[in-house]
Image 1 (cartoon, each protein chain N blue to C red):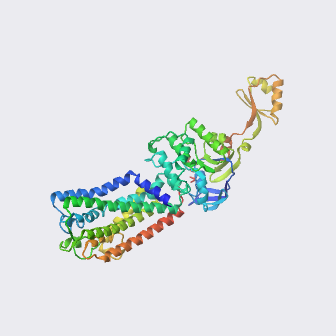
Image 2: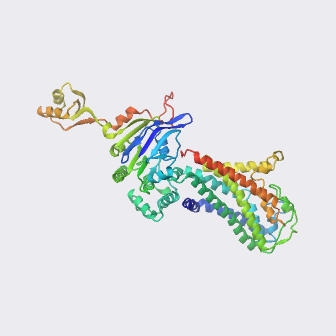
Image 3: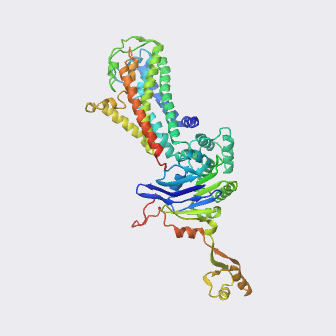
Length: 309
Length: 288
């Protein structure tokens, strides 16, 4: 769906995106992660033909970008760096204008498509008040509605749940998985790791302009080879599993074990009560923190890290 | 293409600013007319806006006088604001990225903005003339107009028109109408020159205010240089050099020399700055 080869963007002396080989497959729910200023937005803008690459290639839906953007972009719904609208106009008018401005937005179906998009994002009952009186969450929903207007094959969403409350976040997550089930590829950037954790099937991590990880989430979160055991009888459990316990924290033990079932059997056989048991998995957070540096919004004395665009 | 143009026109119409600026443009000549009509004190020939001294004898010349009133500052400011807002305003509102990603081709977007600007300029000039015609005939009557037959208009100075006596031949209403239409076209094209400069600056900066002020700075520079003898070598190429040549439409017979030059100079400015705007906008990274 999206393939980039050695994609590079240089702003003067600053290398914002450095030799990125992105590979988003059809049907993916792709989470694009990275600290602030790591090049996420620049990359998204290049995918949409807003920013021109310094070198490298971009292919979206099998067509080179930005050369064929007239064919590709109508099939993409995008939310880039927050929603925007004309504040003095109503939400519906905003959607009508943005739909009419682009090509291939059939006029006959416009009203129906706007109604459907508003319905999907939970704004179906919105009145005619101007967008400048909308709350942050309503604006976010309106931005999502604009992205959904054309029933896109690919959604490119930058921080789609920004400004939403927990219920709103849940709704958007459900909406995105529903659209994905219906065949829409979702490419979203975020630094809300839990959001990506709960929604995405693949992740890419960018740091200082370089793509440092790109993998199935399942693989990344693979078992660590340790088992987590929670027990009211910690001391007895430690005695039973002597030598293989790596760490004890309160009533929780981390046990090195190639075969979790064998550990469980030993504990039960020894009459140790087990309240919780399961293989330990790597968390996305640990992974991301391990492969990325500090974001560009952190500026320490001595300037050991420059500001990346 | 037509869809984008329609969207731009809708945006223009639904923007309160458009209506406020038009009301102000039309309001100023009305205020002037009321003062002149009440006091019967037209500026003596050679002072004040061109043709104003002639309107006391005929209200049908007031549209031309009204254009002379708004031309030096009001009209160019309004045009620079609208043109400066065209791309930079979208960038400032964060809408430029959504328009281009929709996709609205960059050339199309610029073209639609230009057409909306032309429509705004034409509506503004015609509306000023129309309200001035109503005001003029109501306040000054509509006797046949008399016009001057003085020498060619010289740069910004209108003294050559107003200084001559009003002894020229009378104009029939049809002639006044045609000549006013000619003046409207000339002023429209002159304003398009301002608009082209502001439109180009609008693609360069993300600040609509900056683009408008930049265009106005260019005009002020030009007006200063026009009156400066030392700058005589560049004088014929300055954008405001022939701005007042439209007054020559109201001479008997019409003096075409400066009118033609005015059209030519503006055509060059429009072509150069639109070309620059297109070249810059088509290749620019949209980071707003």
